Length: 401
Image 1 (spheres, rainbow, N blue to C red):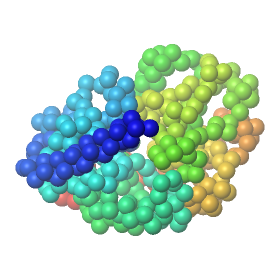
Image 2 (tube, rainbow, N blue to C red):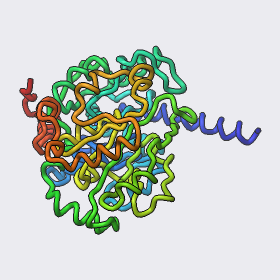
Image 3 (cartoon, one colour):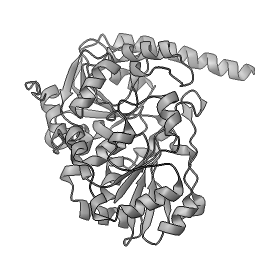
């Protein structure tokens, strides 16, 4: 017990020192060509920050770019040829405090108030179906209250200089839900550029070969979200796979395999050892955009992934076994999913299997065109360029309406 108290005391002291150093370093001149990128609290090399990073690397190598990483997720970055900064180290504090630019897709620790003259580009990480920020009526997450959550969210958004919007629908919601009054980048999502710019057939062939996947079977991507009230402790959530993989393998296994991609908050909660050859865990795969490209159809629930996947104009099925609870008790939705979803909503594995088989029918091979027009109309493979031109090179603001 004494040892634990001593360790906690030491960590508290280090934390106080780092916070003070961050303030002191923040008074130094900006390093004008330094950019810090971070995705999902340093857990991934992915999403909008990665797409912006890759565009800059190819077109503007004059920038000195670093990735902020979680020390427990170092394995996700080791095979990438990138400069890294391990979160909550002295070097990380110094670079965060002196860099000219931050490009980040989630929230930072509350104590990190943006230094004067630092430019904070918040990319966020999805078009919202479920309520966000101060729009959440009753916060169920552990370690906070609704009032505290809203206050902390708007405190964080007050640091943002720019916020990226993938479509007009999102731009309108973000302003209100985040309490955001800065510059909205009406650009589309940089992470979706690859969906337009890659050779899908060649990429899929190489992907299957590299990951030793059957070449003659179609790919189902299952990418659900997390549940606010299913948690182990603060910051750690659990997830129970309510899908009968044995039944799916028996009825679909001759023609399909399934790649499971859990939300980053529950990615370590999956055990599919008994379904080798049919189900594959790709929760730790760097970037879900690659999984979009190689998959023939998507199964999701309330995750924002279906908005991005719609850019491919491929079938989407919504496995929503708990929709009444999720919609009415946990989060609430911005629109009626049952009326507007670009694919069928199902609640049991047997009906899910039938829905998968129905995607073979010609009339079900494409999504609803009105859905595409509303949520994907800004996407054209050039979103990263628009963001870079506007933020880093002082181009005139976007004229999108």
